[in-house]
Image (cartoon, rainbow, N blue to C red; front, top):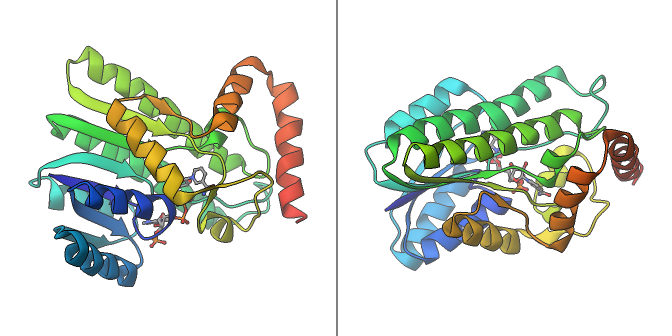
Length: 252
Ligand SMILES: NC(=O)c1ccc[n+]([C@@H]2O[C@H](COP(=O)([O-])OP(=O)(O)OC[C@H]3O[C@@H](n4cnc5c(N)ncnc54)[C@H](OP(=O)(O)O)[C@@H]3O)[C@@H](O)[C@H]2O)c1
């Protein structure tokens, strides 16, 4: 059985790939950095005897994503992890339009296409979509990123329900971590204002929740509390708090 992991070259996706190889899955690994994919291919096949297929491609281009599905649909894929994604910090009026378009392409479009095609194609299995704590709140200074993650959370919850109604044995889970120690900050141009957890811990909690069939997975007590606060607090309270946290990050 194969697990397909996007965002496999770094952070949460990479740690999930390691855990999946360790429990006996063969892997389809996706990311843009081919050298890292090839290193992982060699490492996993030597260490665990894993069959690893790699695709070095840019997921922000929807044609690449459809081709990816077509190339691996004959494999017995029972786990799909959509971990590829990134954010950019700054006022929407200051960030580059090109970055926004790539972000929407990677965080939303690619994840949407893979969720849709695999949910239809698989007889049984799991799709784990990496959202974020940011999915729960509108996030000034991370406006477009938070909006992409709200899409991921909403889509995942609704399609998981549809799967049950259609009698399909495919579970869709949304992982909503807070800060995780990965390359995310470097790419986003920020620092965390909150305590972070390791990518390994996040990956472990995410996979455990996914195999249990949980619809929404919130790693850590803080994130469970954040989910509750988001349901109880109006935007008039949330927006100034989020603004304060994000500007604090920008100012170091
Ligand atoms: N770190 C956090 O605090 C945090 C918190 C909540 C949610 N998340 C979410 O967790 C997921 C994983 O992020 P991370 O924290 O592990 O960050 P990371 O270490 O920067 O990893 C991001 C991964 O996404 C891949 N990726 C980005 N753009 C891509 C593109 N256009 N095409 C193909 N692959 C692309 C990167 O691979 P290449 O560069 O090789 O393409 C890399 O493997 C993201 O969806 C992120 O939004 C992160």
